[in-house]
Amino acid sequence: MIESFRMGGWGMYPTALFGLVLLAVAARYALKPDNRWVPLQIALGVLTLTTAMLGFVTGLIVTTTNLSGAPPGRVWTIAAAGFGESLVNVGFALAFLAIAALAACAGAARLPARA
Image 1 (cartoon, one colour):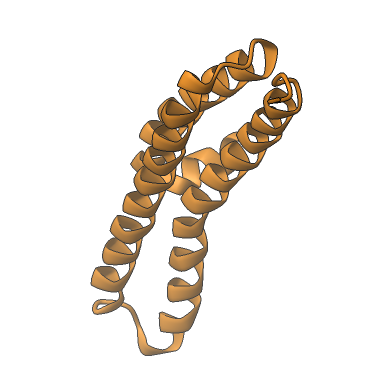
Image 2 (tube, rainbow, N blue to C red):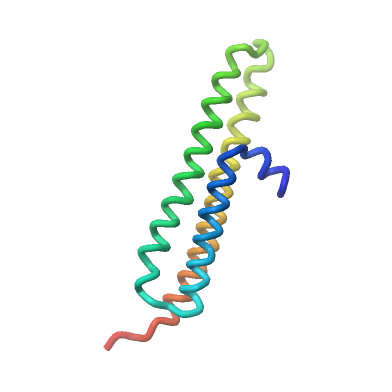
Protein backbone atom coordinates (compact mmCIF):
# COMPACT_ATOMS: atom_id res chain seq x y z
CA MET A 1 0.00 0.00 0.00
CA ILE A 2 2.76 2.45 0.89
CA GLU A 3 4.63 1.50 -2.27
CA SER A 4 1.51 2.27 -4.34
CA PHE A 5 1.25 5.64 -2.61
CA ARG A 6 4.85 6.42 -3.53
CA MET A 7 4.31 5.28 -7.11
CA GLY A 8 1.46 7.76 -7.52
CA GLY A 9 3.80 10.69 -6.91
CA TRP A 10 2.98 14.11 -5.53
CA GLY A 11 -0.67 13.90 -6.65
CA MET A 12 -1.36 11.37 -3.93
CA TYR A 13 -0.93 13.97 -1.18
CA PRO A 14 -3.80 16.35 -2.10
CA THR A 15 -5.92 13.35 -3.08
CA ALA A 16 -5.32 11.80 0.35
CA LEU A 17 -5.98 15.10 2.15
CA PHE A 18 -9.27 15.83 0.40
CA GLY A 19 -10.27 12.16 0.48
CA LEU A 20 -9.79 11.98 4.25
CA VAL A 21 -11.83 15.16 4.74
CA LEU A 22 -14.51 13.64 2.50
CA LEU A 23 -14.55 10.49 4.64
CA ALA A 24 -14.86 12.56 7.82
CA VAL A 25 -17.83 14.52 6.43
CA ALA A 26 -19.45 11.33 5.11
CA ALA A 27 -18.99 9.63 8.51
CA ARG A 28 -20.55 12.66 10.21
CA TYR A 29 -23.48 12.44 7.83
CA ALA A 30 -23.84 8.69 8.41
CA LEU A 31 -24.00 9.19 12.19
CA LYS A 32 -26.24 12.28 12.25
CA PRO A 33 -27.86 12.80 8.84
CA ASP A 34 -28.62 16.39 7.99
CA ASN A 35 -29.27 17.66 4.48
CA ARG A 36 -26.84 20.56 4.89
CA TRP A 37 -23.91 18.07 4.68
CA VAL A 38 -24.91 16.75 1.25
CA PRO A 39 -23.53 19.65 -0.86
CA LEU A 40 -20.24 19.50 1.05
CA GLN A 41 -19.95 15.78 0.38
CA ILE A 42 -20.56 16.34 -3.32
CA ALA A 43 -18.04 19.18 -3.51
CA LEU A 44 -15.39 17.18 -1.64
CA GLY A 45 -16.01 14.19 -3.88
CA VAL A 46 -15.49 16.32 -6.98
CA LEU A 47 -12.40 17.93 -5.44
CA THR A 48 -10.92 14.53 -4.52
CA LEU A 49 -11.47 13.19 -8.02
CA THR A 50 -10.18 16.40 -9.61
CA THR A 51 -6.91 16.32 -7.67
CA ALA A 52 -6.49 12.66 -8.62
CA MET A 53 -7.04 13.50 -12.28
CA LEU A 54 -4.49 16.31 -12.00
CA GLY A 55 -1.98 13.81 -10.58
CA PHE A 56 -2.84 11.41 -13.40
CA VAL A 57 -2.36 14.03 -16.11
CA THR A 58 0.91 15.33 -14.68
CA GLY A 59 2.15 11.74 -14.42
CA LEU A 60 1.33 11.19 -18.08
CA ILE A 61 3.11 14.42 -19.00
CA VAL A 62 6.25 13.26 -17.20
CA THR A 63 5.99 9.80 -18.78
CA THR A 64 5.55 11.04 -22.33
CA THR A 65 8.29 13.65 -21.90
CA ASN A 66 10.75 10.99 -20.77
CA LEU A 67 9.86 8.68 -23.65
CA SER A 68 11.77 10.85 -26.09
CA GLY A 69 15.10 9.81 -24.56
CA ALA A 70 14.22 6.15 -24.12
CA PRO A 71 15.89 3.43 -26.17
CA PRO A 72 13.54 2.19 -28.93
CA GLY A 73 13.23 -1.30 -27.44
CA ARG A 74 12.10 0.01 -24.06
CA VAL A 75 9.55 2.65 -25.08
CA TRP A 76 6.51 0.43 -24.53
CA THR A 77 7.80 -0.88 -21.20
CA ILE A 78 8.44 2.62 -19.90
CA ALA A 79 5.10 3.88 -21.24
CA ALA A 80 3.16 1.05 -19.62
CA ALA A 81 4.89 1.55 -16.27
CA GLY A 82 4.34 5.32 -16.37
CA PHE A 83 0.69 5.04 -17.29
CA GLY A 84 0.16 2.45 -14.56
CA GLU A 85 1.83 4.61 -11.94
CA SER A 86 -0.25 7.59 -13.03
CA LEU A 87 -3.47 5.61 -12.69
CA VAL A 88 -2.72 4.92 -9.01
CA ASN A 89 -3.98 8.45 -8.27
CA VAL A 90 -7.34 7.75 -9.87
CA GLY A 91 -7.70 4.38 -8.14
CA PHE A 92 -6.93 5.98 -4.78
CA ALA A 93 -9.60 8.64 -5.32
CA LEU A 94 -12.17 6.05 -6.44
CA ALA A 95 -11.57 4.09 -3.23
CA PHE A 96 -12.28 7.23 -1.18
CA LEU A 97 -15.40 7.95 -3.23
CA ALA A 98 -16.73 4.40 -2.85
CA ILE A 99 -16.31 4.41 0.93
CA ALA A 100 -17.83 7.88 1.21
CA ALA A 101 -20.79 6.79 -0.94
CA LEU A 102 -21.42 3.85 1.40
CA ALA A 103 -21.43 6.21 4.37
CA ALA A 104 -23.76 8.59 2.52
CA CYS A 105 -26.12 5.68 1.83
CA ALA A 106 -26.11 4.77 5.50
CA GLY A 107 -26.92 8.35 6.42
CA ALA A 108 -29.64 8.65 3.80
CA ALA A 109 -31.27 5.47 5.10
CA ARG A 110 -31.43 7.04 8.56
CA LEU A 111 -33.17 10.21 7.38
CA PRO A 112 -36.72 10.52 8.70
CA ALA A 113 -39.44 9.69 6.19
CA ARG A 114 -41.25 12.67 4.69
CA ALA A 115 -44.99 12.81 5.09
